[in-house]
Image (tube, rainbow, N blue to C red; front, side, top):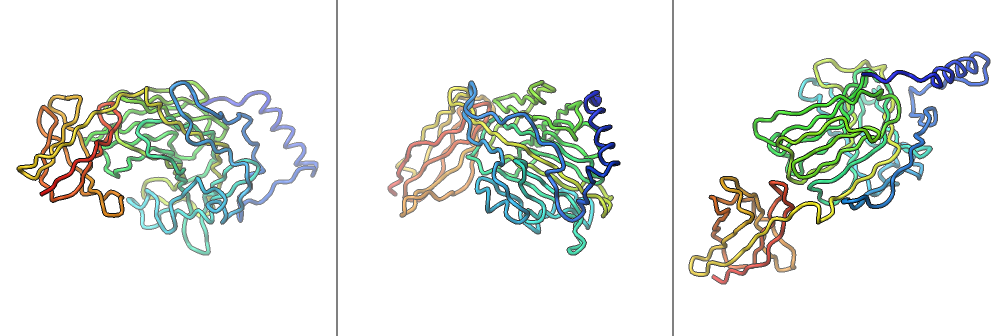
Length: 369
């Protein structure tokens, strides 16, 4: 259910109308540049420091101003999809949105602003997708405070996307997602399965107001919270391989492009990210040994998961001490083993997370033939 405006909001609205009528306050044209100062900033402070079971790896409250064109230079811990990458609507339209951080992203008054609009000089809809620079994350907690204008023809979809780019097999987690038409947004947990499928949960809150959105991704479970209140829990086919956070603000999916006059702002007050403490999830075990007579490497992964399999990457040590990725393999059979033919050299395997277990890197093994 949509949250109704409070009496205090109603009184503030009447006061604002009176001030405008008297000339004390004036409306400003925002058709040529974003104006984050025209919107009241959030009064909920960013949490700093570790939580029980979680280690904080990112805490960004956007305290340094950054005009249009300077965001990525100012915030080295942030990345963004580059121009001329196109948004998801390219699947339906020949005139999709174009990611353009230089013309959409800025920071003022402690708020990151994404200005979604049509650029007449380019003849393109301009959108943004922010990618915080994070360590490799299998499981984590992702929290941000966000609000969005009503913008016809646009949508938001902050999401966790698989590092493998294999969809739907490795899943997807979107929260909050929906069209910017003023209606409540939703949470979506796309099943990590080749057949797809999803769970969805409505937020029941007004997206034009500030809210804190929280994704807690743990082995076999994803919990969605708004302002500390749980709105949904997914436990079926939960992703178990590395994923990364993207704050994706774009044009609507479907055949109809937004009106060229439509424009507005999506604002982020702060972002925090936490990694699960090592004790919170068990770790897989792996052994790698040389089968000298056959010039093979034998890989064994535990715990034994019956008819399942583990994915692992085979790497070879180069002369400069770095590791060359040779390919991704799967274990075979009930004992979760596999033998691989290779030439002379030093090798290791990196087991990817699965079944609620954290991944692991093996010791080195040397083939001498």
